[in-house]
Length: 398
Image 1: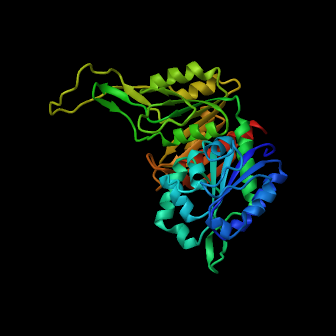
Image 2: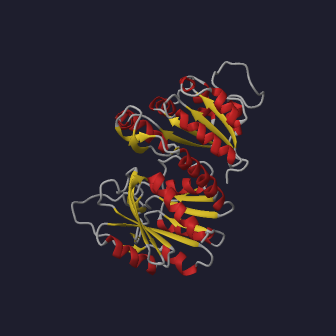
Image 3: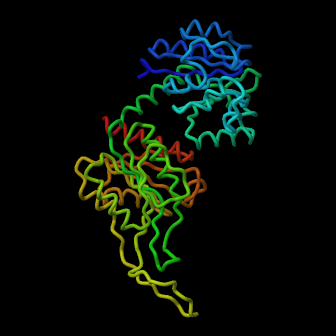
């Protein structure tokens, strides 16, 4: 998967810089074209000559040095690569990336890179767990920067803990997985629904739920990363639209139903992450209802069951449902999986801290049609989404 890929390896100033020599060597052995950019501090640990000899390309350090190649400098280098990996990534370089500082060659190139960026942190475990570092990591994860490690073990300072850079072989494996997934869904048409529907009572009020749409948007982003052609059908206005998706804005369950069904025949995968209202008012009042001190009785009628309709009519499509539960979580989810004829169902207990509506994290169980269940521990919704996409890929290619 790495043969012919153009890879930027950024090396910052930590003792783990010596491991980056092996990363470059392994990448070259797998056929990748490697371009190394070092911070000035990194040159105190490893000579640029070492990386130049292994990569077969000039090594960039100084922003203002004489250009080595006319077409692979600065912005041109950023546009040239298929992926970038910063290894080791110190707390300093992570902080600079989080706030957009560009005060040397490496940070300038990273600010201009539009390809996927991975970071392999390496620092003392106390520095890694400092609130500032964790906040910076969170910011970068929200921007879809991938993190590889760190791992636990003995550190150069003599202490033990998490903060060690992931081993070079594992970093290279992660890059291979990235390119593998990037091809798996090439040409596949994917529909993702997101957000909670709003069923109007009158011009100013509606029946809704607490869904933020974050999980659905993360799934859409993960499929884009995997090379799919993604249509996102969403009720949400507040979230940034993932680059590359076709966005369809809806409000009600009926609007979502019509838009999904109209595209269903041509789709390959449908992920129903939206929280669709089960009922809607029997009629929408034309003008704002006025309170009169009396009890108000609303007549509600069922909304169309989108997932069930797709399950009844699917031919070649892979169908994924979501379920938010508060009790008998697995039992209820299994019943829904089979009743709706889905191929996979993602369920979470919304009463658990870190798994509820609006949270940036999630804790889910993946239920498969063959009876298997995979538990995913608390993680960012982006990372959960990537795991879901990986599981779909495994089933699609088994």
